[in-house]
Length: 145
Image (cartoon, rainbow, N blue to C red; front, top):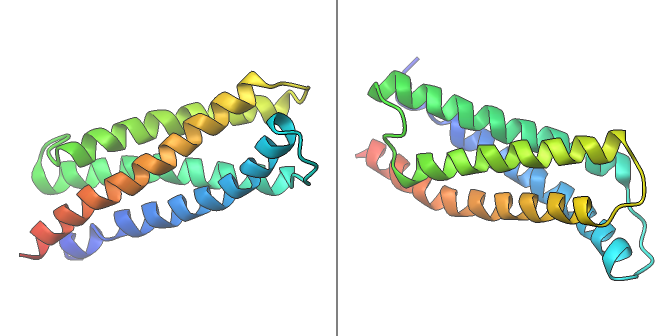
């Protein structure tokens, strides 16, 4: 297969994982409203957990896949500049989000600080994904020339 065609797996995978993350975040915001703002809303915990795990693991795998493809195609690590460095931050935040989420899932009890840290890390992660789409688009444009 042509490496340029194969490289398209990475952005498609990351966009799909990010969209799943936004869907999970929608449910997380419901939890924020009930836990911190005093609103009575339902929190579909099982769906939030499933979608969050899929999204975060997808982003971690997609980041690793992108790094491996870059190494294979260009014989170097982090050669895509800001896109690569942001990808590393995304992977670290995804690991943090996954770890805190697993603690919240497996040891349920009334908490306020850990869910807030979990949500802030994951919302920051999603914002960085959107920024990284911008840098990734420039890389794809350069490949097309």
